[in-house]
Image 1 (cartoon, rainbow, N blue to C red):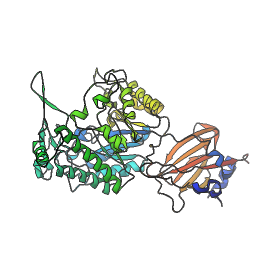
Image 2 (image 1 turned 90 degrees about the vertical axis):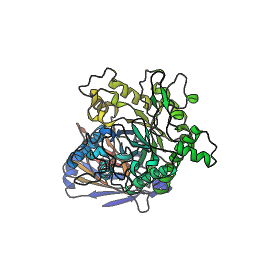
Image 3 (image 1 turned 45 degrees about the horizontal axis):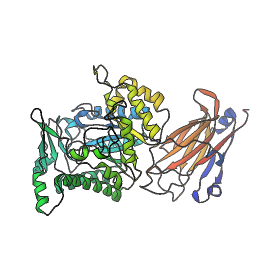
Image 4 (image 1 turned 120 degrees about the horizontal axis):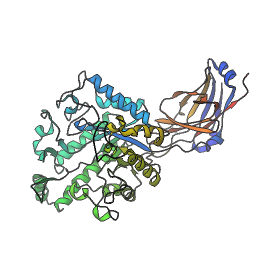
Length: 535
């Protein structure tokens, strides 16, 4: 066994070690493949292409059993089987993240002392899974085992959704703190103007953050609720019933106009979530998925439609300006050929409103494709989604997108999943790095290389003592002159010594780098696999 130090080559950028290990059965492989040696090859570092970066995710909606579980009352085994199916499909498609809804309506799809179990599991709010398991904990475990990120998705203010059927549990906010909860249309809403209610919502976020190894905390577009109207033409919007909280603000000397006060309540929660995450687990990303159209006075020419600034009291542009989030997923749920709500101008708009350089990922309405057997005249063609992905890649390389929702990919609507797998996602990709969260890169990795009989090359990856924590490795394999990229989450892996489907192309080079928890990449380690004629 021989070892080389790479410190002389890398200097201050870090050290790497290569160990050419003679493993049991090595002799047969050397004879069969003609492998003669393995050596550090810094000249390969620049030859391997850049690691592809793209956030490829799907929302997994639990409200109304949109995605998971497929219906209320499934057994624990059935719920877990559906979970595995979703995760396996995500891996098959080469996605790298899932955004799982864990709080739909002041409830929990995880073990919580603060809020009751969601009715979308058992059919009865407050009832734990039987036999017991913690859904969020298992989702995280199984996602990470497959190399997927798992972001926990919360609705911050909804207290009861229109399709809910279960009676509220005894510990639901509508029963324990009825003064916080308002009836608005056919739903219940937590009043964002009630400071104690906002404190409770923040505590829910921080509880999950502390207890679960999530990669992200994510909220959707429901801040103040979408307006409810009443009467016939002309319809009249019903104002949100927050008079008690508003009156206390006025009586306390508050000077903001009522709409500005409402926006300030939402602003405060966004900022508190972001700073709370930074103080507890600064590597966890905070993402927001707002309605896709910005403030009327800032919109591109020709863009028209609903104003979340005026109706949901969401000043999303301000959040970007202040850097109160790590990624934004505007819901760009319109076709590219529309005029008033055109996909590309809206995509460009949000990138312009981003002075802090946060990630902007496009929210795609993938579920607009018709479900199998459905007669949906307004359904989109699958090319709409693939063309939107192409537009994102062209106009914002290295950014990404999120599919709403996973059920459309599971059902392979109109063959879209097959197209994504075969064409659009032709290789795996790393999640874009978020260097503002954590500076510096890991030290270059250590690599042990071994060969075995049967046409296999074995790698064992590690980090030198004192290096930053490493979450995954990027591995480039060179067969002949072709590079094959993969993302590795385990320390040991076995590679084929010949390219699949091309027995004439032997594995002759490797390039490996390490990535930390926020995606910063280490210096690369190049390894040349020399060969000789077979005996």
